Image: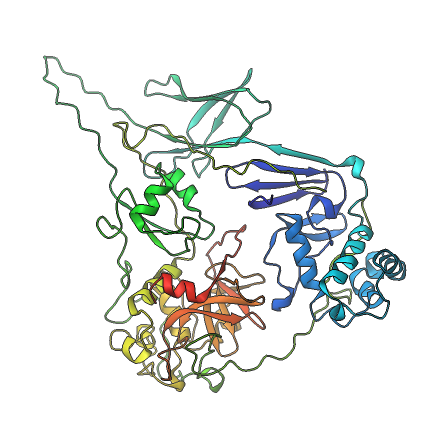
Length: 607
């Protein structure tokens, strides 16, 4: 069974790979060889090309080793699929095994390509004249298995060590936000340690060294005396504990005082929550001390395994009745009527110009509703690094020289101090919803206009005008493409800079905008995706077609049979796509893009 790891690290000195799950459980692979430790049976290296066929969406991390950098995967199946995709790419498609070996295991890396090819041919039994592109899946699998052996996957088996490490993870809140610098004393078995919460209100993870080991965590009370805040016995599962820090005030009275009657148990007020990329309903339920069934029933969620980033839900109440979430179509700080507030970049109306001919139509996504096609993409060509050999290939590294360990796939309860029915209402740690805040605005606008044509949207909002591109009076028509203005609008209302010519889709890539935007190699949720003649926002990968992604943006299709655009989710090819983020925005380093269907997303958000 494949486990859902959220991050991974590799120590090249100790030859140790660590894979972390959301509940704090850590899986360790130590010793062995690189392809085994990294769950990368093909020794695939991280690519340096933005071409879609070389992207590695299944990669979990990049590992530094004595033989250079290699990709780390959350399972050997993911590593296997990535290698197969690479061998099917244009880099190897027309290569025989001998041709492939010269690129995959080059002499520059200390390999012997001729010997490599000879061993692979002998092991797989394929014809020396057969190219990768002409091989059926079964034949290619035989070649891959032979390469796996040649890469050293099965070497040094006697040095392999696999281990699962379970932890207790404690966070401290004052009921609203994390509390940093709180001193604690932790007793683990017979040893006592002093520790403090970090700036995120977290203590260092407590490792369950032995099953049944006593864990006791003490915190200072108002008098400075340490009292037990949490105690348990270590077991074969990880735990996430949320401690709520209460400040008690005492009031002295010299005469008898009739105390007020005790307060009734209070129900927490309804709380709005916006789904973040990587969220699961069970994790949200555990965090807020509610059940998954309560969340699904109160929010009309039919399938608890199908939630979407940007989706609004209500906790401690029913959506619609107790909905505290900002209504679609209006975001705090969103100027519905009138231009953007001062402070952002304001273009020189006398020196500006409209969209260039290359972008006047905008890029039209695949699927229904498009009114004009994307320009054809030429075939990608592979790049080379300073050594002269392609960097998108695998490693073919000299060997420094499995099975996946299974554990119960169970949900982990997250106990806390106090509960919503205890008389001390739950006050969960404030959740920092930092996933690309401009996406919240974009989704709200899509929900507001429900797929309406640009001519209708313009009656309420002209995104050119809202970005102070006043020399383009309308969004209607080929010469007035507004995909870039829409994204700049979403950025600006969330206090991020626009690019200098807000109406131009290609302007984000120019040197003059380097102070405001950075180009990234791999896409993440919410990044700006620049295509020839169009720009959109990355939502996820297209689960129906390899090499495509789902973009959320403006000027993407319109009313059937009528030229124009709307705001919706659409499918695009990744070929020649470039990815950008605002300077100062820190995306999740362990972010993994989800797989979605554009039609399902439009239906879910009622677009």
